[in-house]
Length: 151
Ligand code: SF4
Image (cartoon, rainbow, N blue to C red; front, side, top):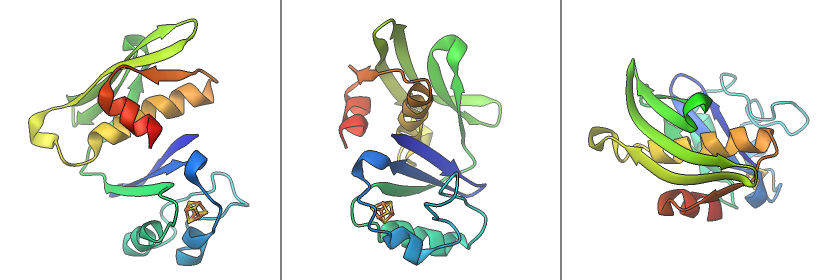
């Protein structure tokens, strides 16, 4: 299961398949990480620096954290994609083909001036999260998306 959690400044990505439930995150920031709560990750209750350190101490790699850079990542289901927006401008997308057997991601791209900010990973996670919430299987011919899925 892939999920994104964000506030104005940071984005946390969580891959439950890798989570060993070692609770290092909870010890690092109990205000943010609480498995008895839904959603279990809630930003805004602790300073970002404390949250960042807690994520870095995750022993499994289930958690990763990125700066948001003011970029919004949302689903655009009518066009079978997730998109990244810098204000009104679309600066990245993750496109998939929908079929009865599931979604197949065939392209992920971010405009050159926004590369290196983790936006492509957020785009792929957004598609995975949306598919999983609808119990839709996801595959990828896009090599980048396939790498994220296999991580
Ligand atoms: S520290 Fe990482 S592995 Fe442990 S519970 Fe938190 S997310 Fe899962």
